[in-house]
Image 1 (cartoon, rainbow, N blue to C red):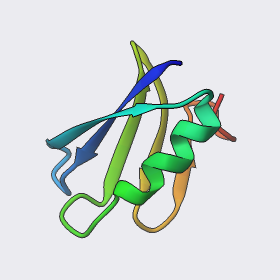
Image 2 (cartoon, one colour; image 1 turned 180 degrees about the horizontal axis):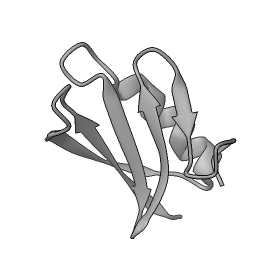
Image 3 (cartoon, one colour; image 1 turned 120 degrees about the vertical axis):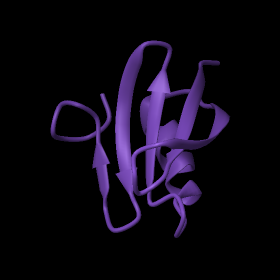
Image 4 (cartoon, rainbow, N blue to C red; image 1 turned 180 degrees about the vertical axis):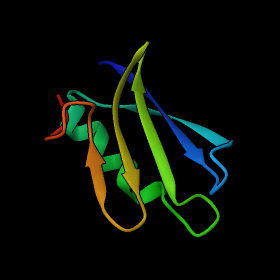
Length: 71
């Protein structure tokens, strides 16, 4: 099972925390990472090794670098 890394980002784009997420797919990892957003960390970046899977904001998810859904 792939292990993803979710980075909680401050409003100033600094990493506040990192979390491991084990998931079978990008979509599953993205769904799990959504719950990590909070007031002091309004943005979460989800990575699998050296590939950014997506960015999630407290207001709305913004998956992947492909402008659509998680790849």
